[in-house]
Length: 117
Image (cartoon, rainbow, N blue to C red; front, top):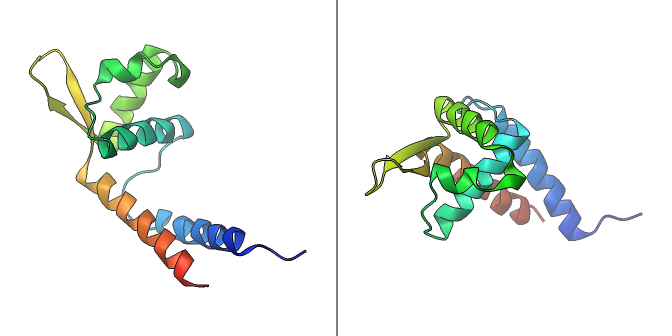
């Protein structure tokens, strides 16, 4: 059976994306941390403020204690940073500069995979 062009591009992207994971950069995330990172990145692209409390309210992401421990781990690994808001009790979650670089590399993998037709 012949693969479709779009499937071939996607498979090349996966291969390229896997190759950048081997580069020295940020420590790997577990699957739940990756889901949290996606939520944080999506909020950032929509220019929405996302606070720790906002994530903890999302029950599908786990219990508040689990989310809090994952955020702490992600911060220690260098994926996210916390910024002050007007309310000193609330912290806004943002991608770190290194996380932005990681997403730029992944974006380049998509471009490269599509260009290899």
